[in-house]
Length: 313
Image (cartoon, rainbow, N blue to C red; front, top):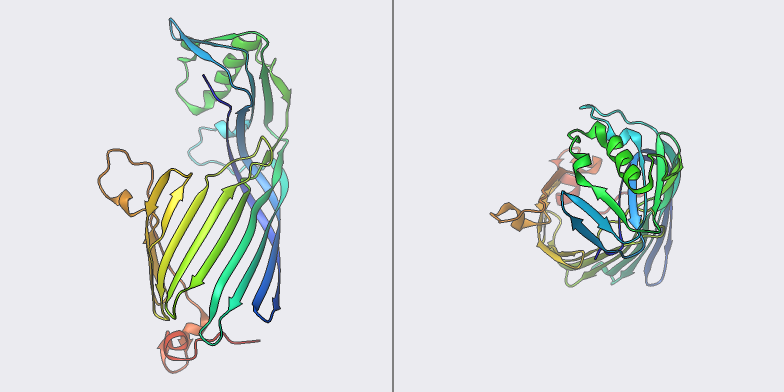
């Protein structure tokens, strides 16, 4: 049995125009922000099947199955073997990000709550150059001969693999071609954020990210739930995030900040010896600001020794 499935990949660049509005309330501050984005699509591809079907292996490296409805699309430049890929422009699109944040004040000691909700990467890209959209819809069981694909040994032969695949199921390479263009949705997500001040230096933050597959051709990311207690002072910050990815994999990380220097990892166990490693990450950075440099006291005088309030203009 093969359940309904989908997958996709896209690369793009974006230019955005951001607008934000902040309003002071009796209980704190309410802010809303919008980023409108113009998208240039480079490479893309997707596949999806809506119906469950059954598949069986045949002798001599073959496959057969019940009638299937398979949709897939791709840009031909995706199959380039070049060691220095050229950023082709194969499509255009529009997108936006929208966010709302609410800070609840707690008096002179600072905020009590910070709450937020965001819609991220809403939109799509229309690929109309070097683009192919296929649909294989069979009314009878189809058969594939695996031996016909043994010639494949480099990326540039991917088109030949697709031609062989459609020929075996539908009789000719172009029988499944619907049009030389397709639309692919962005990896849209809903994000919920919360941050609670427990004491003057102890905080508890949490974030939930849930994918929104609004159209069948959209890319889909993974869900994420993260809870992170932290100690935070003007000079030092330590956070220990516990995250659950796809409601399956649990990771424990750490984040450290010393003045303008920060570093950490979302998955500490990835650096230990494991029988099966699925991923690892490490981040580090240096965040500098003009107000870190005082006239007489040198680096960090504005943020550590002096007044930590941001200047007003």
